[in-house]
Length: 163
Image (cartoon, rainbow, N blue to C red; front, side, top):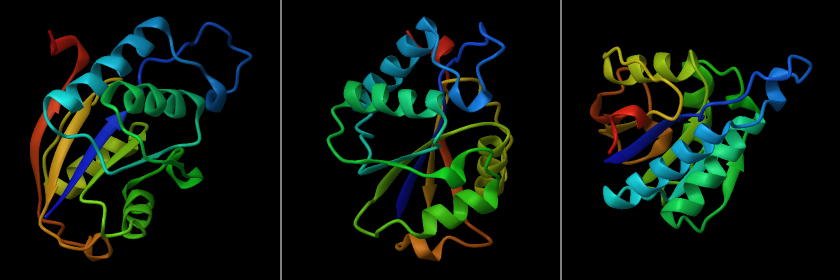
């Protein structure tokens, strides 16, 4: 059994229209929400064994803040295939994960993350910024992730719903 944690990047700024999408920074709210999600991972005993994220600045900053807040000490793997990714891209990246990692956190973007969740679980869930979803996958090896994936949605946490 593997656990996949899906996290949409935290709230990013649109204040400067000259900043390319890839380089948009987090807002103050985004920084606060990312820290809160990291704390939540600790509270839920879901600190990941591996964090993989998009190359976009907002995703990298979200991953770093979450990692610091939950006490994650491992590497954050930045993968260009996760920027503007769709389910197939995520699946390719996940199939390359070493099997020693039982719990993997992916930090990326919509609409790809919502589509990945739907693909793996058959459920539709809205993933606003900094929303965390926990999926359990009935596989022993990441390379085995395939159709049908047999994933189950174990929980969804949105910052606005957290105390």
